[in-house]
Image 1 (cartoon, rainbow, N blue to C red):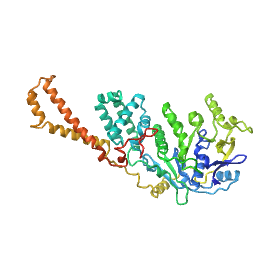
Image 2: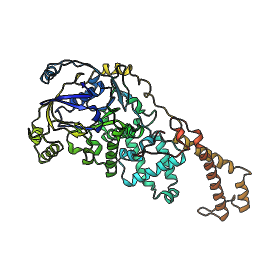
Image 3: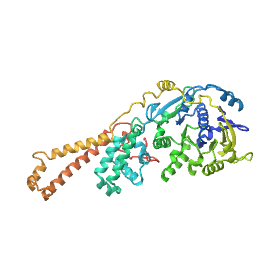
Image 4: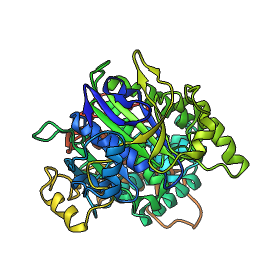
Length: 513
């Protein structure tokens, strides 16, 4: 519900609101399983949509699909509305469904070039040495104008790196064929997990996530993530890629009356599990700076300790549901959670966290000039849309009527690194055959140096060495000439960037400029 530029969250001793002017200062929704985190997320998503703010949210259990259907007016929801002094009015919201696997929504893809070496290394679970070789591969691709769209492009590039490992080592550092083999095996693992379905064209245009409907309400973009959660690394890497795309592509806008987009990151602990320090530092920087792009990021997880302190410090709007405190570790987590709030002398925050009922939460939001409000024990408002998933037939009807229908559903295979390298190899082989043909210069050299006759196994005459070097020179010159022409033949969305300096963003992804 919306009132004077604020989203109504619930009621404590007074109504509790989220100020839209400060909603891009990010937020955190935490609590144990079954305490009401999803309902709080849905209430905020409804409020943002009513305010004309588009939303992107990952749907782990399928429950968020209920936003597309009006609420049923069940007795507990009506009673909750009465208890906090509002009228229950069933409503439904404009929804677009997305799915990496294309089963429950429109397909979502990114190209290898857009992912960049840092995120791809995380996706493939590479160590520091393997990540270094992958960085070399991307550097070679950038310098040679090789467009990396899907896995076959990356495999072809890695084969090129392997074939030229000794030459590349002198320029970029050690390039081991064994390391390249390990990366190739990890690509196979990713493919077996259907992760390759995320990599390719057409890549997602983030503008399609920032739409409003005819009534001016923000579209709620819901990513079907129940199947995706079977590969937590793919799930977290995809959402991190999307956040980095928003950061890199959107212009600076400063302070707005409300965000341009709000991004809900459920199961946020997966982003930071086993993440290297460099990645955590990059995430912290992106979260700190993305608010100036008009984007609010809201992490949803069980406990605040799941989020590194450097990131936690950037999350100004807090909704804390109940936590259990049976084990020493759980008790410590409750203490940490209590300490993140501006204390209220009316009650013991640490004790309250363990006593909250389902649908209750401790709420603190930014107010005034951005200072956190005093924490309040709050009864969360009921959602006006359906609580729980919609039927598959309803989802299909929404997909059939979606404005995104047909735009991303079919894969597109434009000319890229795989095809370009194949052409190079064919041309080089053809030129080598022509150079070695009857009456050619190599035959002449062979006659001069006497290399066309029988040769004892394991030996090579001086003349034969000369012929070999001439052959290599002819082939290398031919390949060099072909490479010089590559930029002219590249098609697809990113072809125009070849020939200029390649620009990569904070997380190493190729910028679309």
